[in-house]
Image (cartoon, rainbow, N blue to C red; front, side):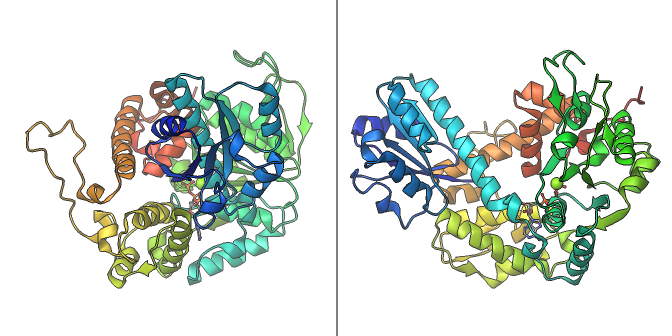
Length: 480
Ligand SMILES: Nc1ncnc2c1ncn2[C@@H]1O[C@H](COP(=O)(O)OP(=O)(O)OP(=O)(O)O)[C@@H](O)[C@H]1O
Ligand SMILES: [Mg+2]
């Protein structure tokens, strides 16, 4: 997601420095000249982040910051300051400023801290705008197909009960949304909805993540930790990618479901818990059972009610609505003067098979709105695989740009450099991660370690890039 950043800094030298350090893929910079204009000048143009100096915030600063936070998209504010002033810093942070950044830092450190603030903002907006966990109600589901209506009506019925649920469906079909919707419309809506992605957590840690652990239970357990079962008490625990759980953890999970008590790793104590469990998987559970990866007893216990969310290609009626919905979100979000989608483009979108389902559709719409230079989105704004044309990579004429270079996709030439760089980076990332996953046999923990990122971040990125770890898995060694 693009982070629109407004710079309101009066010193030309400082402005130039911040521009250079902050600019990059995924950041759209604009500048407000006069400090009085500050955010008012940008009132019509949405932005996510304001980088400014203390002097530009009219007094009282607390109120000004609140007014900024009240603008659409609740922008975050970063104050840059050329002197370290602890009192001022405390005052600004207390008033709701995201961060106060000292300009005395050297370029590299400053670049890094700005980048991490942008990342934080990006993550916050993503959660707020696209997955708004609290608003994901069944009624907000964009769909008009008979198969989804039927699914939603069953979902409403089971919402009122406390039964365990198993939600099946391909990646990106909306399983988590269904789970959140059922939670939000059931008697537990006042309690927490905690989601845990069993595939994103290294195998050895999942047990402690679910049930907690006692200090000293294993190397690295330096203090007691509460597990998700305990934290979700009174609410719902959503176990995503249940097929990724080791047999040992499956046994413990079954016991927790049957006895409604948990036992933290390394502890003697049994803790009673009141949690509704919903589980999801994008694999075929019967096949998983036959292959010995999913325990039968657990499957029957979880699947008291099983919901299957159909893939998008089996409910094409939903595509136009979804396209319109995400078109509007990104049109506003990216502030583009685009007014619609032409017939050919819509036809191509409806005909596409969507292996990544709604998640893929969301990415395609973001890209199309970004690429569009006309009033309407046309075939030219869609990825070649959807528009039905073959990409025509412009091969390097020097003869050097063969296999080692990312081929230049013609559509990049219609993007501003930062966005083109972002797309090229994604293409590179897909290749890099595929190669690394190939080497590790699809092990998330090991791949993340080698790539120097957290397993969670890796998993999320893989989803965005449409990579599935099971495609890299070697035959599993038998469980000990
Ligand atoms: N009917 C819908 N209307 C609007 N948005 C939807 C709909 N279905 C799914 N989405 C969006 O699509 C994205 C993917 O949905 P979700 O995370 O629920 O899928 P999932 O089935 O859990 O995927 P995975 O198997 O990869 O975990 C989310 O951003 C969600 O908000
Ligand atoms: Mg999911």
